[in-house]
Length: 75
Ligand SMILES: [Zn+2]
Image (cartoon, rainbow, N blue to C red; front, side, top):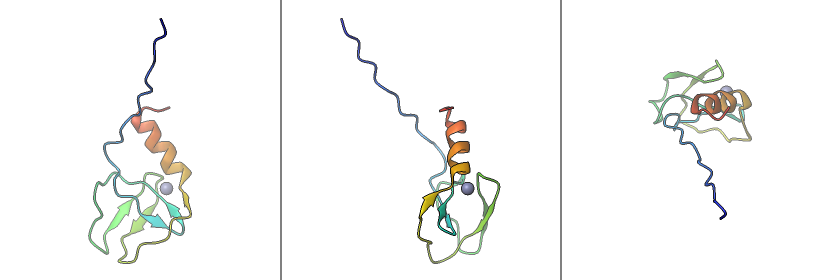
């Protein structure tokens, strides 16, 4: 009998808000976008001031991705 093992994809509960700073899309612990002007801390240790205009995401910040994966238990 072949047992199919369904790969469980872990859900990231937090971090719905992902600001783009200088082309890099970071992760935060916030679920929603804060008010313009608010400074949010990024998972990679940086800071981002919320702007009215959304930046264009060129790549994902690998530090944020790694920390988010670690928190979700992927690593
Ligand atoms: Zn980052």
